[in-house]
Image (tube, rainbow, N blue to C red; front, top):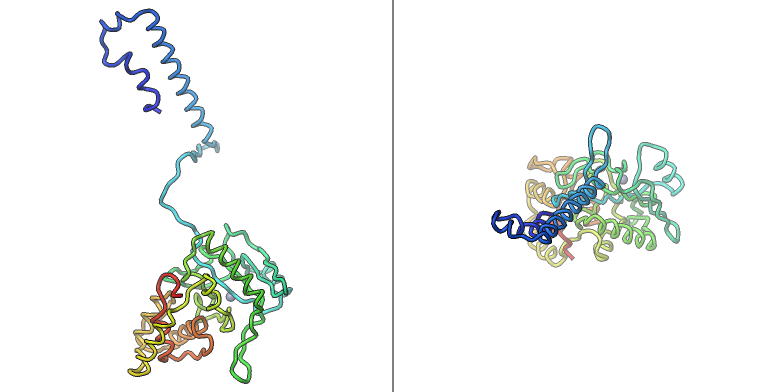
Length: 303
Ligand SMILES: [Zn+2]
């Protein structure tokens, strides 16, 4: 405000030269007074405007007139689940127990998306969890439940039941909107089994992660690079346990650092396979698993 108003008054008072002042006419003096009255009035208006942006709460005043530039969204992970139950059963559980999700995507022919928790609140969907070293992801994530009975394998080894195409289209649209709203990176759109590999298997190997990635939602591996790496590992043998553990950590998983294939490492490999090699989930650290793991980008989609 000083930049706006002082220059108008300065020529009359600064530098102070008595002889110049005495040379002022009466009109000139009135002009000075008018200029200063305008300044005082403007200052009063500014003070009033400042007061208007403050709220009083008795013991303090809340001033919201200043905004910081160093900040980011509280939400940086989206976790996809399946309900392992029917829609009525899932909605009953998710609205009456100590478990919840922001959204439920139904399996109706025209899917319904139920919004059960406001996005500015935490939903209780992931439990003990970790992703890229960020533990207990509930407060920083959006949870999306997909109505699905849970995966199984038939006599010929195929996994199912398949998710209906309309339901997947709804999941893609919803997840894309949420990811755009908060700037969630592709590698942070994950399954419950990714963030809790020792406890969870949802959304399971029947979930079409590749289709999501092709629609610009989530991360996939560079398939050409994976084919090249796989040939290399078939020729020379797959890498050791320490390599797998480091690579699993690099792409987000909370892998052990034991340097051998302990039970937790094998569970984590199975979680990786459920997401990136759903056609064969066997916990084995084979050449193809190693190749896909190596070809998975740390940041951004590999497609
Ligand atoms: Zn889940």
